[in-house]
Image 1 (cartoon, rainbow, N blue to C red):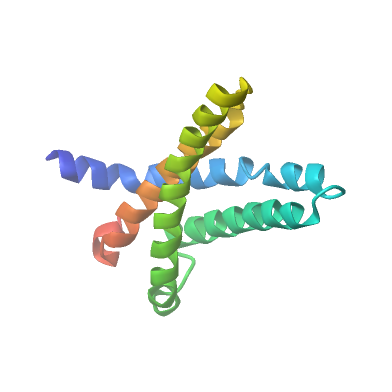
Image 2: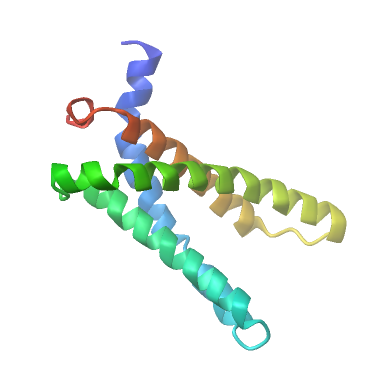
Length: 139
């Protein structure tokens, strides 16, 4: 078995695990609660981000479980591809931003690194899984 075949074979389980972790890591609702009194815009921003992560993870899990009909899945595939790309980019940027903030202020927020790495893994696994055809994705 080639390395590419092994990676493609591991994409679906990794995507499922990362999607569950994404739902658990959507503690952005806690961040929105912290900002609700002082900065209502940021409270809405963090709450919207947390809701978007949960929705994306749930749709991905439904697609993995083949609970979404093929016609509907083909219609939402471009949106999921865009979401996967943005998720991977944001996941790569969050640990970098956390490192920069740590160097500037001395305040290290480990959850930023952990959530960022989960986002990166979920985005990359989503991109790999979504670019496979439906036949290849089927076990």
